[in-house]
Amino acid sequence: MEKYKSLHKWMIIPLVLMQLGIFRDYWGDFTENAWSVHIHYITGTIWYIYLIIQPYYATHGMLEKHRTNGIIGMFLAGGVGITAFSMMYRDIRTAQLSMTEPDRFGPFEPWFFYGVASVEIIMILAFIYAVIKSILTRKSLEDHAWWLTSTVFLIMMPALGRGIQNVHIGIMIDDWPNIPIMPSLYLTQAIIIGILLLAAWKFNKLKHPATYLAVAINLIVCLLEPLGRSEAIQSFLTTIIKG
Image 1: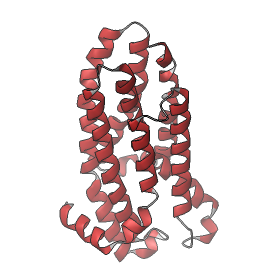
Image 2: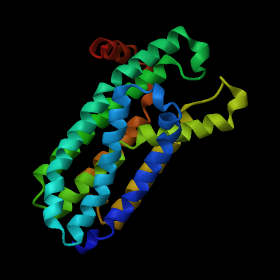
Image 3: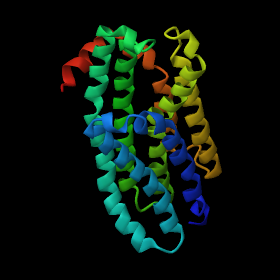
């Protein structure tokens, strides 16, 4: 238990990164966002806050609060996953719009949005798996805590990636629309994996299955371009994701 006394402080870092990354995209056009976007933002933010509060309760003599909040937290985790799935039609719709209005989207071609949808499905499924594993291993503090911690790194990319991409585009705005969009994504994944491995080293979890999963998922995200350019994947996504 002593090992995790500082875990809640470490969990503040991904929360801040997530909020900084999504700040412009979410708050910049707050009134224009769809209802599903608001709900996903709220549930995702609360989930990150839970992963600060829960370790604090567990390591500071408030186990009853920890258990009660844990039950609520599992309900919240389901909400994060479901609302993420509910937003996927927006990716497909945006891909279609970028095909008919290329001048509006500049360097963001249809393949990019299909790629985003592809990796988001993988991230959401991994997130759900990690939450289920945390429930199954709840009697083992070491495993329970780290499976839940890993969920932060499984779903950080969309928010942090947008922030880094916005900065990258701002720096290269004079070259619009000839701006390479993948380097900012690679940088995002390097940052996420770096923080993940640093935390895993700190808490002696470099060889934990949750660490392996989180690293693997973030490496798969680097395949966004080939996934998005695959006609088979585009056809599959268009078929199964309807408005």
